Amino acid sequence: MLGWIFAAPLGYIAVEAGWIVREVGRQPWTVYGLIRTSDAASGLPASNVVGSLTAFAVVYAILFICALYFGSRIIRSGPNFDLPVPGVENSEDLDTNPAEFVPNQRPVEAQQ
Image 1 (cartoon, rainbow, N blue to C red):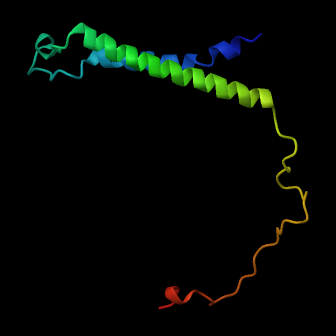
Image 2 (image 1 turned 90 degrees about the horizontal axis):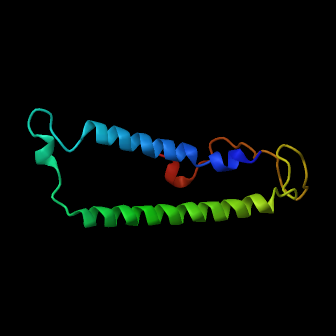
Image 3 (image 1 turned 45 degrees about the horizontal axis):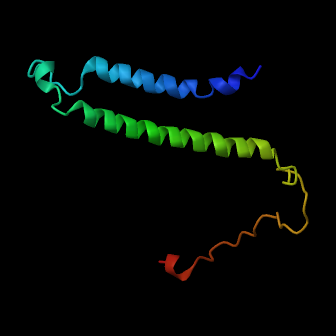
């Protein structure tokens, strides 16, 4: 019944997973025919890689939690039925008449 709520992030996960598969599969850090994959591998220690991966995961988790929090606040507040319906005359204090067209009365800086 509420499975669609839990399915909301699946599109994002699919995009990220597809990007990872594509980038790892084509190895963009190597130049075909000029350098071997083993020579192009980074010399970074694994702790640096894990640290940056953890930092990205934490930032994404915080953004995801914020999106869920603010999205749930918007959904819980519901629609605002006090807003006027577009295309319907609801208020007489708003002037909805078109402006009068007066030809050849341009600002001085526009006249040449």
